[in-house]
Length: 371
Image (cartoon, rainbow, N blue to C red; front, side, top):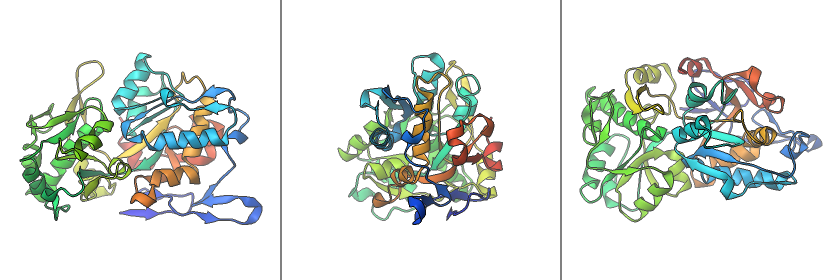
C-alpha cells in the first residue's frame, strides 16, 4: 500500500512519499508535504552559467527528465540542455558508460537504487538520491481483445492466449533492470498464486532453472525502452512487463500486479519473499552475477567526473521540488512515479550542501538490501 506522508519523518515499514501540495501565503513560500521551496536553482551561486547540462539516464526517464531539464533551463539563465547531451538507455549501460569512461554526464539516473552503491561508489560517485518509486505491470496495446477482463490474478492465462498471435517481449536483463524485474514478477506470481511453483509462469517464457542465467524462448527481445511502445502499438508484440511509469507516459493499457509481484511492496512479507528468489545476469566483466528482487526505486547521482557538478546538483534539487514531483507523478495520466520526498540517500555526509535539506538517510530496510 502507498501512504501519503506530510512530515519530514518517514516510517520504514511503508512507502513514504509526498504527493500533496499545500500553498502558503506568507512570503510566497510553498510547502510540498514538508518541502520548503527555496526558489529556482538559479538562486544557487554555484550554478554555472554558459554550461550545458548532460544526462545519462534509465530509458524509461526519456520523457520525464527532458521535461525537468527544460524547466531547469527556463529557471536558470545561461544554461542549456539539448537532446544531444541526454542519453537514455538501460541502467547497467549507464553505469558501464561511466566506469569505462565512454560516458560523461552531470547527472546519472538508474532504475535500481542498488546499482549506484554497488557499481559506482566510491570511485565514480560519492552518493545517490532515491527520488521515485514505481511498480512492474503487464503493458499491452489498448483495445487488444486478448486482455479483456485481465486482472492481477488471471493475467498469466491472458498473456499465454495473446502470444498465439504475437510474441511476448522481454528486456535484456544484463543491461536493464526491467529485464530481471520481469523475471522476478513471473516467479513471484507462480510462487504466491500457483501453489508455490516458481516456474509456473516463468517456464513458459524462459529456459534455465530459477536462479541461473535465463534465456528467452519464443519471444521478442528488446534492448531499448523506445522500442516497446511502438512495437505494441503496431501489434508486432503482444505485451511486455515494464514499469508502470513507462506504460503511463506512453499511454499504454496495462494490468496492475499484486504489489509484491509488481515489486511495489516493502513490508516484511514482501522482503521475505524477495529473499527467496534470484536470477543471474552477465556482469560488465563478462562473468555471471546473481541478482535478487527488490522494490523498484529510481535513484540519481552526480558522477565524480561530472563536467558541471553544481549544475547536476541543481537538477536533483529541482527533481525533488514540487515542480519535479508533479512531473514525476504525471497525475493527469494516472500516475507514473510516486515521488519520494525527502529523497533517500545512502551517504548523507557526501551530499552537497544545496541538497542537504532535500534528503534523509535510506530507511533501514532499503539499506539492508544494498550489497
